[in-house]
Length: 327
Image (tube, rainbow, N blue to C red; front, side, top):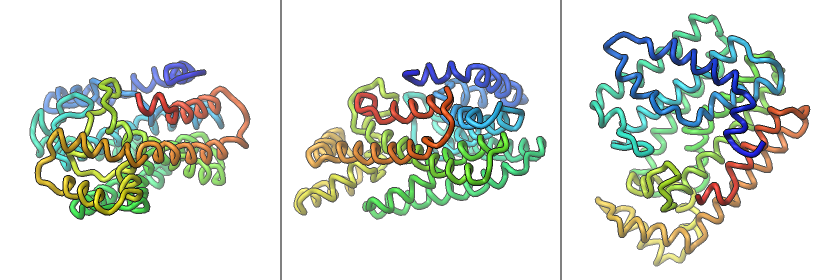
């Protein structure tokens, strides 16, 4: 097993069922929602969150109806959060595609996100999988609070490493950790395992976000991420934070001045990118990712060897491979 495509093959039957569930529950909405829902879910994406649900579940037992429901819920929640994020960030594109707020308007986008959140809660209730509420509800609080924290630090034009991790733990890692916990919970894993898998999910979420932040400094259009987007939106991410920590005061002031300007030009983005590379912001970020990977692999080590454990290990290693991160 070498990459995400081979990982998907290991759980092919699960992902086929997931797609059928998605089509049944989402694509059959009434005419008011149909075209909008189809637009939101037309790009399938990598399905990272459902994949984690299934891989974790299969480390303990065979997936069941609750596992499939969990995979569906986390993917819909993730989509809803992206819709709201785009409104907050006033984004016009996501991965090269027009965002829902730009295609329609902010009101429509917010209501679509709200609808998807409500749909998830109703389905958990309808299927009587009440234990999932205990896992998902704190995540919804974290997602909202993390976004508010990010706004606060964007407005201050400053953020240190501890504050950065506090934000990404809420905005990104909390939902990924919930995927891992809920996947195990759906097949009856022990409480001690759920605690360990929560830590595992937090590590994956941190790695995933740091990797995404690094890609913002890449010129390669094949990454699927819009180059310089975080800079334009004044998101103080780890590569810049680490570079600022190492830089002399005069250069730091120059960069902060660029950061505080009302309009970020292409030349400013290039200067900030050069600054980050000069003071090893990317290199040091990769080093932190590798340390997080080591901790995550330690959590997996005691579990019985299986294709699904191997897939999780491969997933972690692929996330942190330098050529993948800087591709």
